[in-house]
Length: 246
Ligand SMILES: [Zn+2]
Image (cartoon, rainbow, N blue to C red; front, side, top):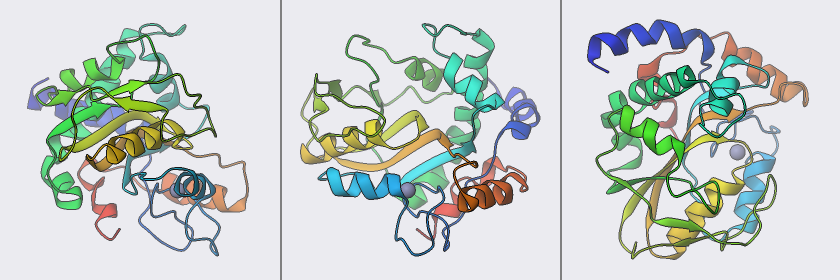
């Protein structure tokens, strides 16, 4: 994708993207979802911090999303092995990564420092190449893509996380690694991956997720945050601005 093509993508994508909030009373400073005003972080991050030894406390979702929504379908069906796979979804995901990450490298380094390697959180035991790796390459982010993690047979799930859900596949001590995942819901997988890397001596500079799932029907706090954020127009150039104060 050249610059002119990418510019055209902005108008296609923007109606389906919802900016993540800045920190505030009702916002979790780790993952940018809603939280109870009296709690320090959201319930997902409270579990992450309680159960994992060295999670990464800097999560950078590009957009909030709900189910159902267009973004949710792109995120679910861009994988070639998914039942509703549509090749156009790959283009959408790559364009979001190109505009959201590739064009924001300076802003990203301002909030998380430099990194040596970009790694996708492995999703299954068998797959050697995660479909998101192809989309990162399509977005021009293939240069320092690494595979430092292997999934172990220790169970992980929606609310099941573990320091040993992943193991490292190589020496990572001293490496600064940027983790990327398609969605962030409870953080069980990506934070288990982050903890495994950091326990092995790496520094996870941040977790970038394309979509942070939010459930507006959960309570008044989640509904209010969703309505406030949805009312704002999405700006690709401002994704990492909200994180400066973190
Ligand atoms: Zn959180």
